[in-house]
Length: 607
Image (cartoon, rainbow, N blue to C red; front, side):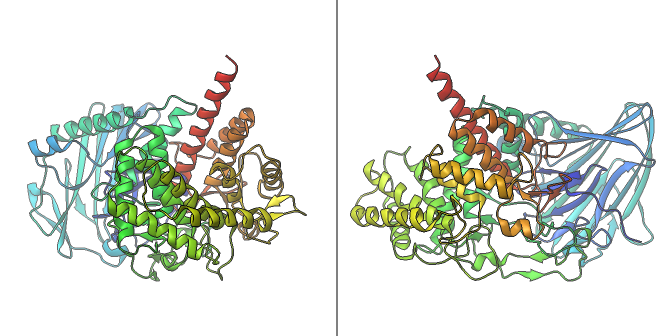
């Protein structure tokens, strides 16, 4: 008998900027990797409901459910109702200031789950079944009395403490049943320790204190946003998602906390996204600077500068959270995959690809940071000059493109665009006196050659549109970035015509856009960030009414707590791909910033 599978959008995320957990709307924690995002899973039911392992807390009988994040936090509340009885499950990973941690010892890794009965009486069941190493291990669970349940995971230690008595299952794991009456509160704490003495915090009042401190910490972080534009609720939620996907010890940003959630249910388009793409990092720098999170943006810049030192002037596509080269891709053949979608992958072979656009993304992001400095150190100047030389030598080479197809390299229009961006931003930095000894004449000459290449070979006269590859006939949503990166004005004839063709061929309905024609033909979902690109483009075109219509239509495809996956099913609106996806939330923020700026410009003109 196959275990029930939750839809991807049925999940929500909690975390502490070191790791993250996904919890379904039925109270089942189905994904958790410790101690960091790309570690082996402790619970992995999302990619194999039979052997992956889960930790569920839910009513014994069927119930009505609703959930929310406590305002401006990453603390999740799931409410279960049966007639007049109501129980609230609160899930979070504790976070607080360093000063508070010094005052009282906190575990480095902890999940707290607290059940509160707010009305009536309800029977609740608990099932705790960790399966470390991607479900390949059924651990021994030792009862240590008041110190809780001890689970050895290699040289690491898991420790579960609870306010209630748990018993061993016949098969594996622990179970418990409790009857809660109004005012009753029961808490659970799961901690993880690496090769050292475990910190086993008390429950009771300390759990409630941690909850308050965590709520306060997230709210203080959210309050730092300098954004009063449209869709503020969704913008702040997206910023909070980015905070959860950040790895605080290094300043990195993972693309998503999951692996192998499918772009097509039951098929093989399943990838491991628990790594750091330079493109995502660069987009995050711009988004966070735009929202006023200067310190967080600078942390991403620092990570970019550190990670790229290892291979410069060549840039890899992705790195792990410490800026190291990732291990080769593997297949976890023992796992059945989400809803039978196989294979489940560990690692990402895109690390071996050539993606020339990352040079433009990195230079664009770093230049925004450098413009705020009075002086740039010699090493950074040398790095930027090296990237410029690399682009000058390689801009005309075919590459794998931003969508990472595992097919022969081609001459992608988008890759050419970002090579142009790389040289354009370097030239601008030189004009502003930030980079010395730059071969400006050479960079300017090649920049204009790239422009000519895009304008002559990237434009299809018959289609009246910019195309995915030079001299090609297929469309790609990323050609909208020609306007967003200021290569061409959004109001130009060519950009308006390109947008019109994209709507005709890639939009199944308003607000949804496939990334390219190939993905549409293969039955993938529409791409979340592409839909926000369209809203961004429309805002830059001055068509604010249509931009709002598109933006609002995309928002309808978020789940009930405003989270987006990588893709959206064009008919059902179901989430597809890894979840939640930084790329989509970055697109949301960028589009909202473009709308705000366009509205402010219109307001000034009409005064």
